[in-house]
Length: 355
Image (cartoon, rainbow, N blue to C red; front, side, top):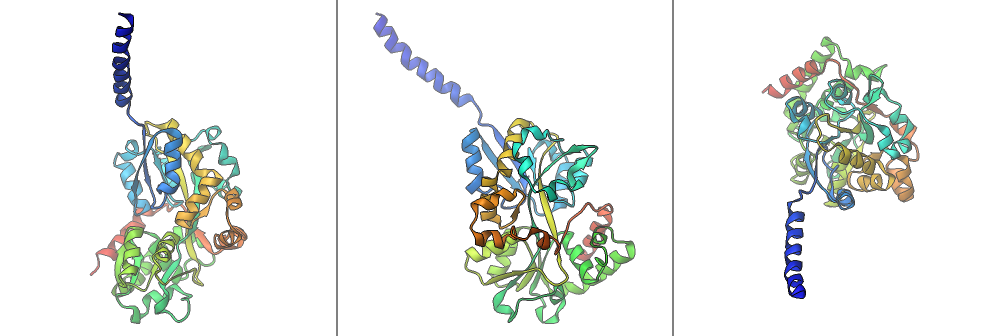
């Protein structure tokens, strides 16, 4: 009798255990980040380690991120990757969680130049960890140029009518300001333009419109414009260059003589996140040297953790400028907080609306 009862109870217990495990919901970490920052090549390792799912949405501009957060999405997403032009305002507005750095042991390995900047420090607290950084380079179809172009002024050349693309982002405003020389002698002026300077930028960008085939919003969109031979030059991301090379497209990338703007992307935990413990684990995982190497493989951006170089070949170190960081950074004007961002956007929207 006991044996027969046991034979009955074992399958019943197994079935109840299975039902119980099915009822447990897999924790999901929701991201709102730049393209390339949630690639399976490195995110899968985190999912396996912490038995969770990472769900990513991508943003096309810093302003899109801020608009979504202010619109109530701070509780929809757990981790965001704001660039250096909006990171300060996100922290100041209470849209991100101040960080307990003791929960991110690899923070101590991050570049001293990056962590010393005031971009994510508000009221004595740290709101983000530097993750990746890089330039906004001039990308071009090598079959259209006998020599690598060396100036942003080529965008205005009449022979490239309808063959240029610019990013639907304020970085295009910064670029036009550079062409007009407003970064001399102080590059930070790009983020503090006067009304007169903004009007001059607007006039300069209106003169560019006949040459613009399309203003791109996502990296994939720009890649397609090159692939379809709709454009020959654009301001883009190193990620675009890497993707086009994988497709065997004849692409080149350069920083013109006027220099270019650059960005530092941070990882932040939103104030409304309901998965803060998991989010901390994600930040720690993403800034570890091994993960940073995997991210650079996908994006070709420069890692915030210099120790990632130990996992790279000498050529990879050179391509990412990790062998001469200080001199390379002198050619980049890192995005900063723009106090009159609303006015900049007003100018940019007027340029876009003009026929």
